[in-house]
Image (cartoon, rainbow, N blue to C red):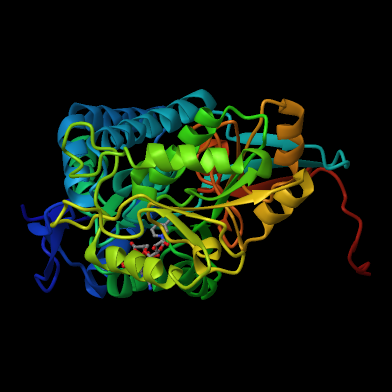
Length: 495
Ligand code: NDP
């Protein structure tokens, strides 16, 4: 398989013809050559997006017509569900059923934003009372312009769609730069968008390296807004780039999300949500349940049960039946996690299970599901995002202590609390400093509900109404009743 860039409605190679390999993390084999765009390709793509935006070919369409395009894209995704899911699994390593969820969610995301603009069509102007009858003031919402979307590898197609669907719904044009580690479903998405007949230049895809294509995109002066998902380190660079020319930015960054388990919980249920929270998608999830605080009364019992269940997890290629944990996305991420696990040996934490490569899997970037208990609060594994199947547990005595420990992190993406006492859950949820709080569950994500973090976990929200507004500017239009006098300066009398 050989991919191409998609610029101004045309598929073609990078200007210099460069490519890079896509590697299947289950086999360590190269299986595709991906077009590697650079600064000149980015420049072409941004100019195409700029012209398409400025011409009004997309933003000037009625929302009903734009919605019809979005629905066609959704239909194209669903028609290719099986193929896209398999490709996502091959590129990223995630179990096939999880890849299917992602692709279905991507289609639904287009449907959701289509419905939003269909419902609101014609309601784009709202009058405000400014307290002076000589004036009429109206608020209009307008698309922000050319959007640079830079996305990660953990949910390759879905993270692109979380940006693309609301941006297109709003009337923006887009240049997408996916992660070099997983670009293939975004390439397939470009084909679906092309087949849907979306006008040329409205959507552009430049696959390539972050340090070249990504950096060129964030620095491009014709970009109005940057929407980014990825690491804090790169997020800081993106924000710096956006500061030149004062461009809008939204950032969805990392996390170290806590789950607090109170002593009235059913242990089996808590164990299932912890396992799903950290082992789903191999722990390569920004909101992963990576820190667990368990009431001391049930701590030992819970960790025994968690260990037993975790050791039953089927690990293997994502395409194999019954596999719950696939390989880590790449050699680089695999080595990074192994190095963290190696350093954890001297951290003072107790390794309950896992801690390295699982036995019997000689090929592929596999890491056994790993549990640490009694982890020092200053240990790297407790403080830093690992982005792999590694969970840390500690015990607590009081509600106040649990809240303090949960909030003691530079991140604030997600948090969770489990108890049969719903008043207690509500009380704790109100005090957790996180953009998403789950009660008696962890990770369920809905396109209708806003997604994003406090503190170093980011700026802005994706999904829901907020995820659409992120692609709109607000304009006030104020009209003076010209038959009236203003009265500040009447002019000199001319004799
Ligand atoms: P990055 O943040 O570096 O990558 C995210 C995206 O940014 C990719 O498309 C990447 O391209 C691009 N990028 C990289 N450098 C630049 C740049 N200078 N300017 C513009 N774009 C750039 O994440 P990594 O893939 O390196 O993963 C490292 C860590 O980040 C993970 O271990 C995890 O902790 C965290 N992460 C968090 C995610 C989240 O959902 N919040 C998702 C992914 C990672 P390219 O891939 O080509 O480098």
